[in-house]
Every structure is written in structure tokens, then in C-alpha cells.
Length: 115
Image: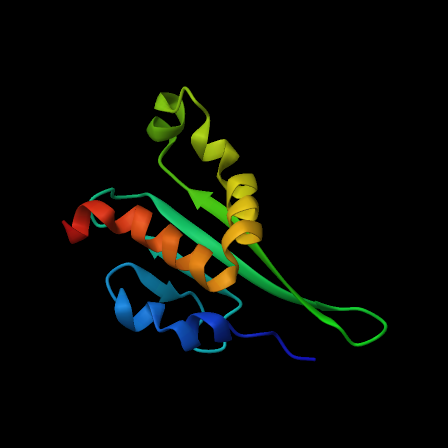
């Protein structure tokens, strides 16, 4: 099987809805997408998408969150929110599902820009 694309992203229209914030790192067939904030230069979140199948043919999408932040932001993050972000995203996926979790993440990162 070839590399999976972010069909959920394409179906939900996040890239079109948030053209300044959301982009597919490798184009339409990408396995990852970036979310960046114009109000926080150098701060970027990357969602990596993988598809796993079991021996019965059941498909399990797996999304991981990676953070790209300036060193200074890491130093100032006393509550270690940046470090906890990947695990928090997994929890959000379990609670909201894929599409709603992505939407929530994008809106939270871009909230200041939309106000």
C-alpha cells in the first residue's frame, strides 16, 4: 500500500478553511500537515498520519502531533505544556474524534488571528 494521504483533512476542508495556517507538507498526497500561527512566528505543529491494518483487514488511523517551537519558548514553558502536547492531542483524539480534534487544534492555535 502506498503512503496514505490526509483524506480527513481534505474532506473537512481545513486547508481551504485556514489557508494561512494549514498546509500539507508534501502536497496533496502528504502523510503530514503543518499548522502554523502568524501571531507566533516559529511556532508550528505537525500532524503525522499513518494507517495501520490488522490481519483481519481492519483499518486503524494513527495521528501523532509533533511540535516545532523556538528554544526560548521551551525555556519559558514552566508548565511543560509543549512537552505534554503530543499526549494531550492523543487524549483529544479519543474524546472528539479525528476531524473535531484537528479543527479544535487549528482553532486554538489561530484563535488570536481570527479575533
